Length: 318
Image (cartoon, rainbow, N blue to C red; front, side, top):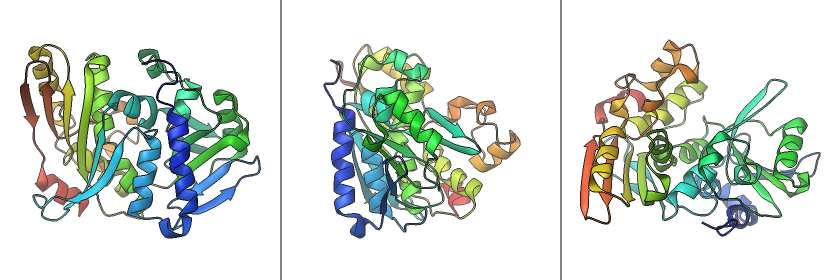
């Protein structure tokens, strides 16, 4: 892919402009920060909702994904499901949506996702991605209840090479409905991230679709975080379309589901407590969808592995 050919931040800015124009309908709050940055509250003090979460997810993917809701009758208690699709899944998910930018300052902490990452390129992940974005504005999504403080805004401006008044921070806490929706809309992204960890050639992943149930928000952060993670770990389903030999597609399908993890079989909140809140102590293989389908498009072969665990979903999601 040529540098700038997908224009992640330009795509996201169009989504942001649409959100601002429909702020009342989306129940979001738009403001300007002290450095001129645009601040969009989609679920902290603002009510937000499912639709606001869908827009957040599409902005997080740099406009290269389609995110919608549908009803899955196979999940008796939690049929409302997010469906996310992309024909440029590597760039949409890893180059933009992945929450990989650690932003902290004076007690404030958030992981940044969205296309601003492709301008900053401060994460090791970008060594595997040749794409370089060019844009006159940048969009960053934060899973937090508070807007970023001035040092964070300045840090993002410096890293992206943009004046702070050209930055947009779109935020919502995990405990909110919009926050829950945009997190479970990462079902495809976690499959792409794990594929990279498994050393599958990213250039061979050409299309993808993922689904995951929308859990009920919960006021307790740990419970809310556990539910959104379990929605993917035990309820996520992903299909990837890949190039290359069938044997590679088969191996990817077998290794990709969350059941390959040593920590599989327990609610995420329990796992998180067991490791005393240390994300890095949790087996990274756990962060993947429950069910995986991999289609080798050059041979016509399809391989399936894993399965959704509806009992665990009902235990975790309530």
